[in-house]
Image (cartoon, rainbow over all chains, first blue to last red; front, side, top):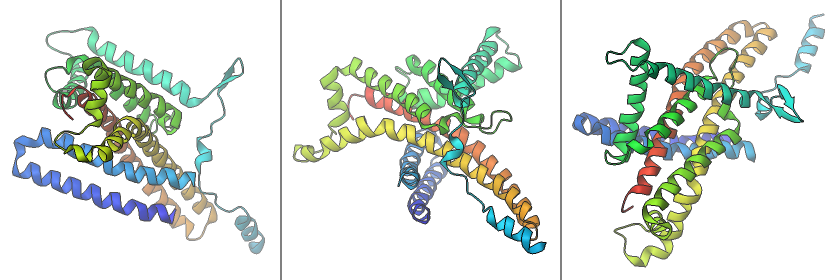
Length: 61
Length: 264
């Protein structure tokens, strides 16, 4: 469980970075929001998948 | 007296809720086949989504009433922000019914986690999520194969464009692995694990608070605090429930778009 806590740090930072970049992009170019949103959600989903693999392993191992 | 009560209290230690809380006994049995609560919830959710959307769409008046307005808004949200923006305005119409159905089905099933009487997220049973992800896997592969043919579809999914052919032996197996094999697994695991983890967190705070209050002493302060946290976490859970339905639908749309696109 401590291992999973450590493993969640990486995806946590990654999700923060992804949404920081997304907010930056929208602030600079609001008309690109609909395009950026799908990319941001895809990136978020991919980063989140790593955290989820972690919690699945925490219960399996 | 005091020592004795303390001894009995420390004898029954706090057991953190584990995966065992998801093993529900069957509600009733049909010919030896136990029907459990999540299975019933799936049925209720399907009927509920059908009834709500049917009632909202029944009148079809030019000036919508309240319910029709809500239904149109919800439908338009999925159609425009998921269907049209991702799949593209050329051929998104075909997939809108599937996307809307999946979105509302998952949303209702997830909201069951926070509704009284249900209070169990259906997709915290992995099998339910596997079935849903398997369905969308079949759909996006079938769409791609219908458009490009079997070999052409494999080429679309597995051969990245704009890369020198020297890299193909390395990249093609990787792309095949990530696009064909891992996608349905992550799709299902994401939904399942979010619901599973959220529900376990709620149960932990609720039962932990109860246990702390039973302990007495400082527990009278810490127990209600845990319950306040449980309330906060359930609001977070509602956000997650919505977000997971949205992400599942969005990824479905993205995979369909990837299968339809001419170059990867």
